[in-house]
Image (cartoon, rainbow, N blue to C red):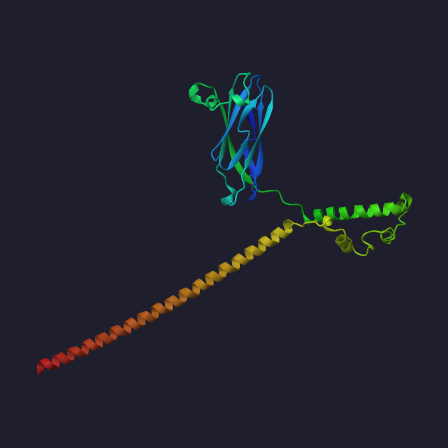
Length: 271
């Protein structure tokens, strides 16, 4: 929290749990600790990326105002979840007779001799909270199944029978349960219909296993690429050696040819 002469601003860092293709809101609280009416204005270095409601307004004396900053849906994950966007909250004392519709940009102009208070805010991306684990989802699903089952039993048996444990699995069939008979929990879940369906999410252990599998696969691909590169280098060296051999042989042939030519020319000159 930043405390100034006019408004206390909280938080000083706007944190957005980064999720692709989803708008993400973040509340910003402005507290007027003075006995005077204060007007405020919220600015950002990236106005197309954020929606601020309200982006200006009035905070009465000893009052609190909440501003909602919403990040528009993003389609690309920034490198290392880094964000360089900035916000600034400007505040100025105004007459008690003015309302929010009377706020103008000239009120926040330093050239007009206005005494402004400015608080700068940072923006940070954070990892979204993990979804509920499979165990929690399974427990909720069983609760949704057992509640209708208990109601069926209650309709046909008294409280005393329930407490004595005399109700058997046949009670569902005797009192016309939509399931008919209870043999396995899977059958009951199927008969319960779409309302009983639950979604399961990979827990931390499963996520760790998937990450290890990805790392292993990438390591194997890297080793394979290094091996291919080594083979190519060996083949290239063999080609170079063969080319040097052919060049040496060609040079030798030229020397022999020039030598024979010299002998023939010498013989012709003597005659």
